[in-house]
Image 1 (tube, rainbow, N blue to C red):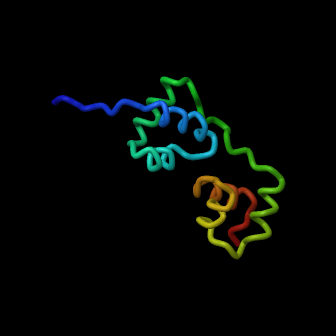
Image 2 (cartoon, rainbow, N blue to C red):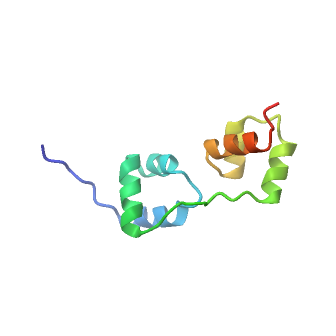
Length: 97
């Protein structure tokens, strides 16, 4: 079975480099119209890692506490963070109650 590989454009590579710390692999894949393993492979080729990219600032934590009435999806959008990151921080701060 022959596979057809889509070549990465300069624009796509630049987008990946500019946004890998701001977006999850799932979000990058959706934006670039590629599969998640393809995003991961290209990150390995470029030698870029996401690692601990989502350190929370005091302002962001204050924003979470002040906006408990908003959905987690809305908070993720407001803070430009993955939904899972917001859920994890909610649990760490015991805001689920």
